[in-house]
Length: 158
View 1 (cartoon, one colour):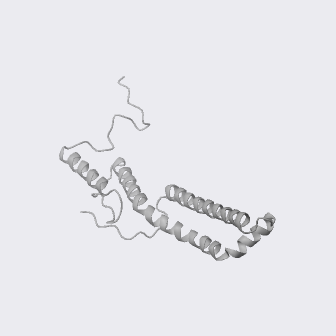
View 2 (tube, helix red, strand yellow; view 1 turned 90 degrees about the vertical axis):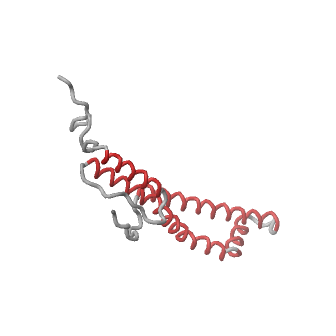
View 3 (cartoon, one colour; view 1 turned 45 degrees about the vertical axis):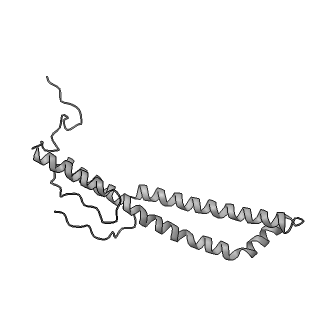
């Protein structure tokens, strides 16, 4: 039986997926920040300073809502970090499955697949382990053996 994996020590376990997710969350947060700034500026211009010019209104908006802006900017790293921590729960299991499949393809023996307790897709590990158990019980050929040669082409029957 496989041992339970230890706590993750890497920030990114799948940089392509998690990096894309972090960029998307940061972009959404920036768009949210800009939209709020524009909305507050329009609010002040329309309801509090209808006769002021836009430059003065924008300056007044920044001075008046500076604490809001500072807090909003300060929260971006917290949201990104939380998103990364959550993404570990699905990126980690897929990475572990992908590496296990590579080992099978290379003909190496693999231990039963086990994800961390709070990871998503626990049933995927169970189904994978069931398939491996059935394959072993049926005496299936080595996973390296296939209907293709080393180049990936089917051998000719010449």
